[in-house]
Length: 109
Image (tube, rainbow, N blue to C red; front, side, top):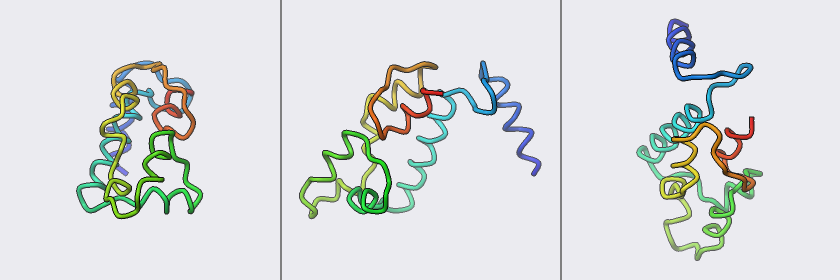
């Protein structure tokens, strides 16, 4: 795939790379962009359904999952307003510790 080399150059240019993983800031930005793109094309999977399917929810998503089912907030992206996203995208070793947060997972490597 011709795009592979472009992505490799991008990763090389963004800073220190340990092993095969990209910098945590880059992973956070890519994750945010992908979820935002999915949200633009329609509502996301309901948080309660995500949890039932075995998906991990962060502490904030768990709170939203118990919201009344009639609200549309359960199919929105709570990461857009979470400070973990901001820290994850702007710091290389962000202090994000709660389980279920994808940004915390990127910064644990």
